Amino acid sequence: MTKKDSEKKFEKNWLEWVVFGVGLVLVVGTLSYLAYDGATASDAPPNIEVRLGEPQRQEHDFVVPVTIINHGGQTAEGVHVEVVLESGGAEIERSEYGVAFLPRLATREGWVAFRTDPRSGQLKPRVLGYEKP
Image (cartoon, rainbow, N blue to C red; front, top):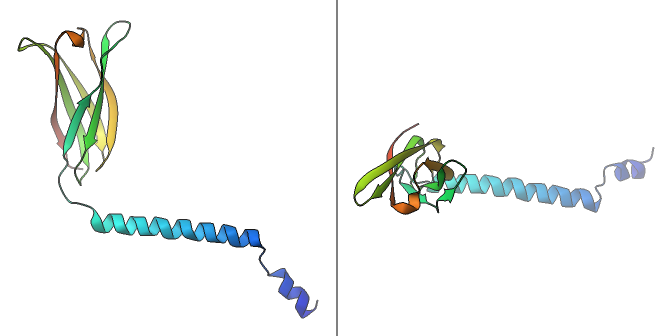
């Protein structure tokens, strides 16, 4: 084997360089994002917002989509949400929804069910409580 043959053996073709470059960009980008996110993360407590969607009729009841958003800088665990159906200031029915884990700046979706048509009154959501993990 000559010196020229051994040099040929270790040369990389253009495809190998492209794959190397793409991999390098992905690794550097991921590490940069994680460093930036860690340095700029807020330590604010969870700030939970509850949004309700349009009630939908099902076979035996009515379901209402619930979206829970954590605008805070910390995670909330065991989030409990209550949705009350009122008509004329009187409570008609109440339903609850729970989320086991709500990370910072995250959104979770679910549904609450009612036997009474929610369109016949006013729905009022509120967060009952949550834990710090």
